[in-house]
Length: 142
Image 1: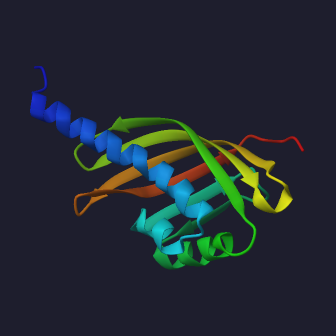
Image 2: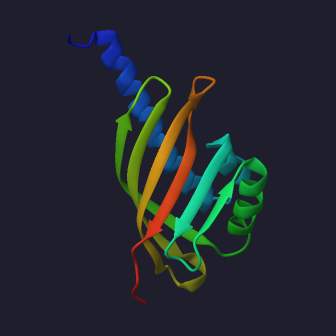
């Protein structure tokens, strides 16, 4: 059965809200807005990364605050986000992939990382958030 116009509009609004998350994430990293970054994650949200030293994973708002507090201090990364793909699973869950290019503000914008985020999203209180954000770095050059 075909989806109704209302269902299609709801899906479109959900996709747009989800696409906004990676964009705001980069904006908040650039502006060192720690509270903004944390507001994008669920209470039990996860950030993980591999390919930049030892793999690591942080979970929950307290651990995320500690991790991103270090990122927000001093010269840090300058991320650019590209090609955001969103797959809606149901009314409150989705997954997606986006492709960042991360440059170093402390090293004349030298390329630090290039890869992809594998994201899980959850709608909490009517607002989409990152349930899990997993970064895989594929950049091995200088």
